[in-house]
Image (cartoon, rainbow over all chains, first blue to last red; front, side, top):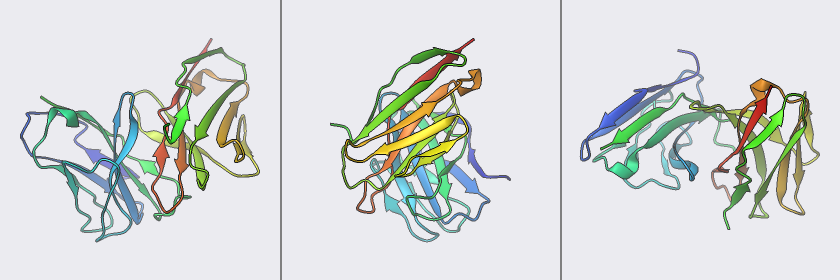
Length: 114
Length: 110
């Protein structure tokens, strides 16, 4: 693994189903983030984690949950998917939670909820 | 008013042209500023941070104007490979997380 990876690359999901998007980084970054990107709305922060064991809510957290059991992994779970959660989801990480640190992004997961 | 606003474009320019983008922000307490680049259907990648004194990286120059609350990105001698969407990113202060602009689309034509 080099950098930050996400899985799956894309997914079509029936409404009401539970789904976990995976994110793994091998850069030993302390901070990790989940964004969604929608046409006309740009990148919006869903949840973040400043360090392993801690999480926080971003701008659009409703319907999503995260956990940060270790430094490398930061999964995003949709407990009961709805069509409005159709989006491109990006995971990102940075060395620390300081705003001056560069955020490195994974390749994204394209999720369609029908 | 949105916290971070950009002209969406698209900007269509010929190779070799100079092109400039502006981005305005609403919170005067904003502390950190960045330009990210995003290619079609790819992830965003940092292009450059924007410092108070202005900074240059090869053909790219970034400026910050705190009085008028905007940042700019100048691209000289445009290349075909510069075609992308350029995202303005601002940390609005008070320990808040980054706010992302919607992006400006650039197409450099042969």
